[in-house]
Length: 326
Image 1 (cartoon, rainbow, N blue to C red):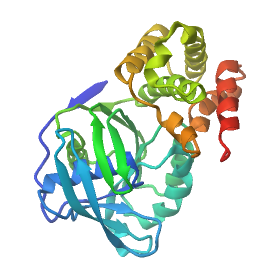
Image 2: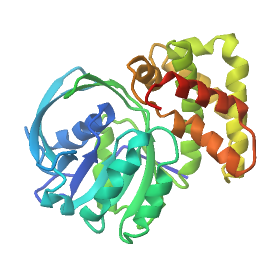
Image 3: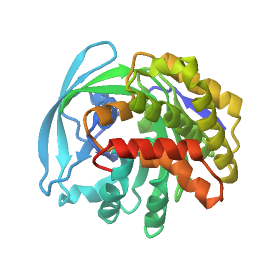
Image 4: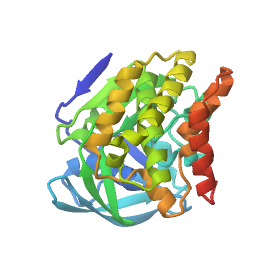
């Protein structure tokens, strides 16, 4: 079931729930600006980042929206010893997949007892240790999600909204997100792009996994823009990657239409033809990649079900070999 939300955001007052964002990369800053600009103020008091330092600090941010208007706002970056962590009722986790466990788990006990967690990252896998951890925090719920909104960092604290898209969310475990917090999330798409709620959410994430499992490693290994993957020379490989994923997903209880998934992969290749994937950029800049949570997750689950996934395993091995960090 899909519910598309394009409702106007609710009014903001001094009693609004405190929302925090973990991860100040391009997507984290995009989410911050979308949530905070509704206040029409130079400083957002109910949306904050959580940083790595002990002490809280202020940081001026710049945001170029999709109309090319440049917004400036003073953001609060909460230190890990700030008492206001206990007031955080909604936490958006926007770090890389390989950072989720280390960044999030130590924070859980410091957040509000009823804080709701939203994971927004590429790939699958981090939800498993997070699920186990919040089992010890009975009033904290977990929502999983993905977004095709795009943002580009101009520098550390300036982000440009480079592409409109859909954000898809769904409850995974623990208490449900409150209607009030759901209403606040409408701000993520105040530009009238859809915010979708899916139940169950895992089929959506597996479909997104298929897109990432094709475009990310192939573009990184072939050092090409996404659009070049539409060439016939990649067709057999793309089909094999998706075929393995569909088989593994089926054993995980997720039914996917292979033909529809492949069609969607090619649609995204076409829509993002001029773009360079995040994995291409990570490899180019000698940064760690999320390959272990994309093709690596497919291989991991294949082993659980005693299946072979040679094409995904090959991509995993090749990308790991490229990166000196993995």
